[in-house]
Amino acid sequence: MAKVAIVTGSATGLGATCALELAAKGYNLAINYTKSKKEADETYAAVKAKGVDAILVQADMGQDADCKRLADETMKKWGRIDGLINNAGTTKFQAQGDLDGVTPEDFDRILRVNVTGPYMMSRAVFPAMKKQWETGKERGSVVNISSIAGVMGVGSSIPYACSKGALNTLTLTLARWFSPAARVNTVCPGFIQTRWLLGGMGEENYNKMKTMQEETTPLRQAGTTEQMAEAVLFFLTSASNITGEFLIVDSGMHLGMLPMKAR
Image 1: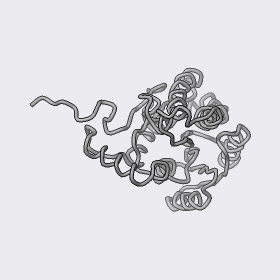
Image 2 (image 1 turned 180 degrees about the vertical axis):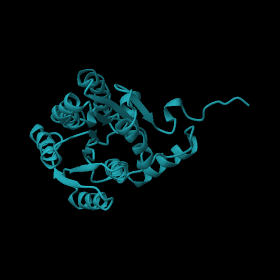
Image 3 (image 1 turned 60 degrees about the vertical axis):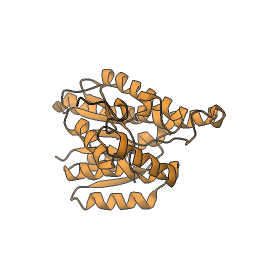
Image 4 (image 1 turned 135 degrees about the vertical axis):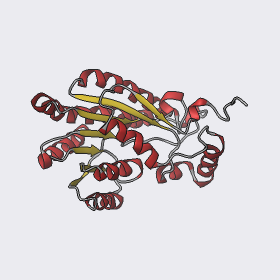
């Protein structure tokens, strides 16, 4: 029987790439979107073209009822849930030094989607994973998409960095409580070449950051969605003895720019 995965926020970017890579591995997919219907339709068609089955579900990951409905529709279609990628997220692009540039409402919105959402979605799928473990020793897997912002305190805004730090902590707590039925891990991407980041940063700043990645990170490259998806799928489909871990995927940026080397 084919395995089943839910990928939240999978209309575009990293979520869409993860869905396509899972489809190539034979997974049936629940594709999720909030507003990007046209792009979600395209991702759905591309997944189906891989020869697997799929459903397309509009659901807001900041709403508990929508999280439950996404899990319920997946179960109704296939009767199982093997994997969950909590990819949906949001931010406010605001210079961190401008402390008046974010409001309590910004914090509430960003934390709800980036932290409460993954919690609610994980809670919604866990009963299915627990049942599969108890009846057939089939272990589920949850992968949270965090950010280098949650490790280093950098990123698009202070609320965003705080939300990703909280998501890393959520990973630890869920890994404890979901065991042994499911593993829970997190990928912390650095810069990713996506339309979303381009739109938020603006073309000039985006190109400057991309060039900086290519010229100053230890690996001298700017990350792609395909490279991030490699890490996500490692946790979701392999890594059978790993839970409660974070993996930074940032071309080595966290090591520092222009590292000293022995000559």
